[in-house]
Length: 392
Ligand code: ATP
Ligand code: MG
Image (cartoon, rainbow, N blue to C red):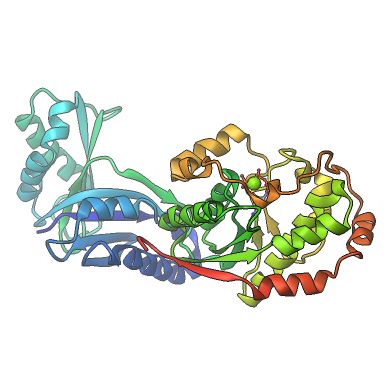
């Protein structure tokens, strides 16, 4: 019998009536994620997903790592399988967990039976396997209260499975289970983290990047493409929308007072994001804004910025400290790319004294100097779409 990866489902287990569609989404996401790694059999039974390699080329280590980034999975374990009889189970524990048993000082066995026709109770099976392990590894003592190692035995429909401590999964909800959104992706530290966080809630995201060539360079764009690729392990396949933003920024520079540059520019970002969202059936706009971090992130400035769209603006980083954001960026693997030194369009024509407490009427008056609709249409018609998938 083959080794398997056992995946325990997260929050979706709680979702009552929607549960089946959630599970279906998760299964599709898992299958899609494994497609590039090799041939695997993926089955769902009793709230556990079983992943088995179907040929030599299917690398279980690689699969384990990839599945650790799939949202909707609470824990993962590598497990060995055997026939459903007590002696085979005990023998398997002795051989499969040799390394763990030799290095631990204490252990206990936790047996579960989903198959109630198995002739022993869970407690009897735990005791049976426990005493076999004690005999084989006399230096590792039994401690049922706070053991260093917990040996898990699960007797299920087709086989019995043995594994040690499970690894924590990515958590959250399966991609696609909470609809679609757009996410504003700059080259900074924050927006890859906000993208990850909303994805984790099951939202499929369309990343949008505003690009101000030649004020921002080709390298700045490549950096954003790279960030989107890195996010893909979590967020799935995505199409990055690169919006030409130069003309808008030049118009603002030429026709609006300097202290309002950033604010008016951000309103254009929101208008364009709104249009892209609507044409893709997306129901929210995600940003990496963080209260008080810069002049455009005061409450007054955010009120003026969001006034151009009806869609909810999701700002998952709003109350976090920079340190916490950096920690997450490192964890998800985007930090090193984010700190590459290329400029962002927000740093082009930056006002020396940005307005931190703007009034909406004032801003609307200033925008009357611009042909807002035409500028938005022009930007939308120049969008470059870049498909980003695993390993592409
Ligand atoms: P980040 O580290 O994500 O760049 P930031 O602290 O630099 O954030 P701002 O530059 O004010 O903050 O941007 C706030 C948010 O606006 C970003 O988190 C991002 O969601 C969005 N944003 C900024 N610049 C761009 C851009 N060029 N393209 C797309 N979105 C952008
Ligand atoms: Mg930025």
